[in-house]
Length: 68
Image (cartoon, rainbow, N blue to C red):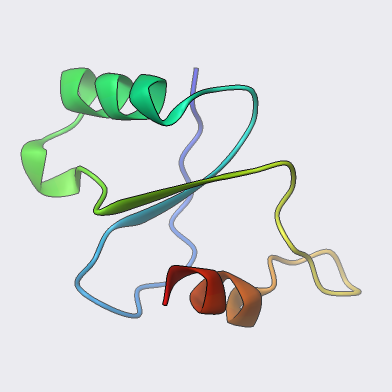
């Protein structure tokens, strides 16, 4: 099961940052079966962990840099 969290909207692209033991094909298959086509990702990044600030929040600047 995938958990989705909207962190911030910075463009019209939908970008998934996934932490877990899944493949991009599994993510896309799950998305295509369970979400409207307008929610399908333009890019998928598979990470071992999200970059975090000292306070434990997602480090958005690093995520934006990865997506650029």
